[in-house]
Length: 428
Image (cartoon, rainbow, N blue to C red):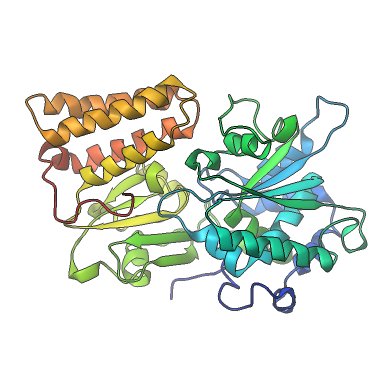
């Protein structure tokens, strides 16, 4: 009920270690079809489908590929790269892990098609270092794919060749950011770069690079097989397709749920995730993880698509939904978020390095009470807004999202910050 599976269609239904199971389920048919198409036709089909990035930004997947394929190289020896961002570090998000561990070949097939579309000769799957099982499954799947002629030189008798390697993260939340991820692959410390230029123009080793999230790549095979028009009939007009939501917190049935874009938040929480535990009332949902926004009870009827959320100043982010019951404290949750962001700051830029500490200090003053509480609450928002304008990367720019939404919808929690029995949740 309510679920519509594309990226999770094989999860729990086939043996992830048996490539024959995947092939029997129609696997690699999209790759066979794609290799008979001109690369620009694949790019066009993806643009027409309306597929948008599922990692957080929601940018057009097809346009990303168009920019990468058309980028000119400064160096004489030009090589294009493709990178799969599987560094799933956003708190509350666990969808990519399920795909890699239960259907690794779907990811690999989507990655190969995307690489062919942009003319990439080398690919990397950058996996969160703590995901040991995911790493093992992907490595085995890559070896099996190469053994069946789906990877390597002259794939399936074509003139196209591709090699894919696995790179491991080392626990840094920041390495989920695209340029920091590239620095890590290059063997450097994970620091962000100044943009522009963007990866499509000057990415890995200074070459044009396409970066896509795990979930995004898993949509590509079905789009190639069934066509853009088929995909556009799923979801909403401006947010077509499906989205995986990782629901956790105070719910009876936590887990990953893939649904059509536009499904109401209420149905996700009450019909799929089983409602609030112990018969308690819903207080809020933190959507998007630490870099997300707090959604109050009055917006339970909101449609879960890019436009509807943006219209109300919310974000979808990675699709994490951390549900909070009535006895949870928004202030305590925000305190956990700010501690987390401060710990994960790389320290390269002053606004983030100093700003995250100042935000935490301000919030702790609010928790302690005092005569200047109102001015400190206002300063909390002003400081986060300044960081959003001056920080180098999304980590320093993100505190304004949870802070702004918390103050807009739960200001009373800050004016009377009594520690509730439930305390914070999940991020401690």
